[in-house]
Length: 388
Image (cartoon, rainbow, N blue to C red):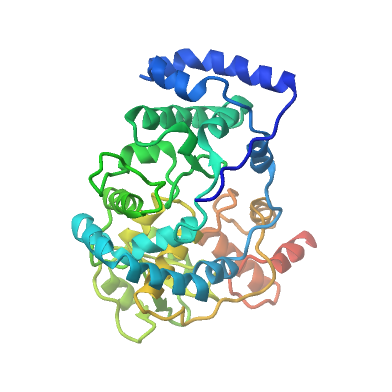
């Protein structure tokens, strides 16, 4: 385990503000069932941690393009380390799969994405971090709820305050559970009386992840997604999570697996175009949604899903990523939609989410301006729109 990160000192006024907030929070914690003994053990003299505020305020100006994210998620190193983890913990992973019905490769992929297979579990003390974030005011209700959750975990005896560590925002252990998720899903797989997701032994954390996915609707034997080839002239308006059809219905429209055959009937499916029509096309199933309960970002779900496929021995995506330019910020995506709408191309909303309506509007704009109608939202498109 990494050495616990030191909390730097703050001026007296800042700490006094924290102390006042803690005093005001105590009745709410008591009302939520926290005992006086637990309070005294965890919250007495809790320090303000300025580092978590710095990290909360820092936001990268630009996000990674989806292909860069996927390159990292399923890098050669992460695949190799994942296969090593599968071999090292083969016995316990098979037991976990048998008990919860979740593929062991998916559980290991979450582990790899969240903490690099336990190497980066976080070394921030959770109680001071959550107290600081709740005191700070932004998302105060959320962080106060997580702090109460963390106190309940301490009260249950699963861990003590000095060893309850994780990320700056409260995610803990091998697979980075926030306290409320821990309370809902964590399990004592080893039978030692504690749900210990912090231990060097990852068994409880891996089983807790499987329990989380199982409770989120994981269906054994169903893929999270299948890469497909779209026919010439495919109506991209049908793409997106809002349209679900049986694989046989997609096959009737000419959608095929990259092997040339029809996709088996794994259940209702949508077509996802994560980089627009020019990149890989995915037929996504219910297990895509199950993974999204862990983290709702499509890129994260794809990262876990694709890494799990690679750990099962499957190859990389067949269709290449466009790899053009950088990804747009959320504000720039909204600007694209606003400019398209203002110029008569209805995006069906200006929320920054690039769905079928936006893709269709982009293609109409591209056709009208002599561009290749690929529907891809790029910095070049934005610059063209800004030019009128």
